[in-house]
Amino acid sequence: MLAVAADRATKHLALSGALGELYFNRGVSFSLLDSYGPAGMITALAGLALLLLACVKSAALRSSPGLPLLWAGAASNLADRLIYGHVIDWIRVIFFMNMADLWLCLGGILLLRYCFASSGGR
Image 1 (cartoon, one colour):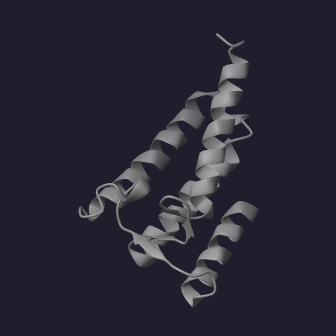
Image 2 (cartoon, helix red, strand yellow; image 1 turned 60 degrees about the vertical axis):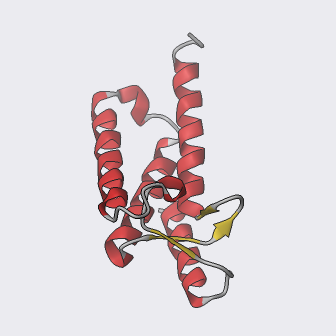
């Protein structure tokens, strides 16, 4: 919940102009398929459905430390799509991103690391 709250708060700050330049991502990650409006929503819903299915099927996955971050990032970006019709990105590195994207990346890395360690490195 803290990760979602942090992302939502920073997006509100970004919308107020306090964080500088904004980008409204209507596509999927890195603005892929930006010109095809439904792509972002379809991808977000499919990703959440796959994550839910994986959690239901795998007890090991449910104990991964990356899972809460994956849920937080996915939920907060989906909330943007439902509320605004796009994701609010405000952190500019090479491309624009937001804290939810950071949670997704960190959660994915932790999940892979956990799965690799759980398999004994095989």
